[in-house]
Image 1: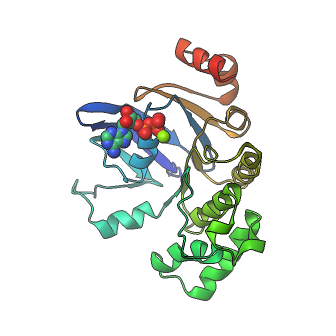
Image 2: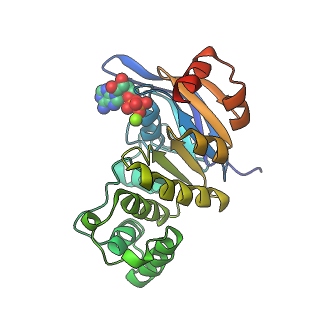
Length: 252
Ligand code: ADP
Ligand code: MG
């Protein structure tokens, strides 16, 4: 049997207050792929990511993570919180605003979820956290508290924290949008390295160069519709829709 995709989204729809913000979205992300999600503000990008890990409950459609349906069990019944947490743990999320735990130091931030959710032993969690901090170039800051770090450093810690759960996919929601311009590069470099190592990533971003250089697929959302899905070269040089052409013009 062929390996299940890391993420399979079928006919996903979601409304808020009667307004459909995701409309019949289908998308397959294979293992090791990087998918960049582009679109203007309010087009539904964050909601899409939040539906993938059921931080938002979809109205219709299904989402499978590494072959396992999230949110709904085999009988079509809603999962209880424990079941949902177990499959949600197969996804990692990196937010624009980092969301590190302020009362924990860098090392503890990375160790926390494996210990709490996976019941990993402390020494094992520490060893993994140290390796991951080296991967993102933050091993020197293991004992530091988040408030002492730059935005770029915080985001690299947040990435290490997401990796600590060995997720099937890492969801990035505008990971560099809150950073000073001179800090953007260090985070994108870490993300590029992850992609070379074969991590599966879905990245909402406005960094066109990154999307073009690193993605396997680029998708474009417009008012909740997925209106274009292409390989990056095609997307950036010969898009199918007038809307994407316009978007690229405006962001050039
Ligand atoms: P993007 O990330 O592309 O900027 P979002 O997914 O955040 O877009 O939002 C899509 C639309 O859904 C927007 O109109 C937004 O106002 C609306 N929306 C998002 N989350 C909620 C919510 N929790 N309640 C009501 N409306 C929401
Ligand atoms: Mg958003």
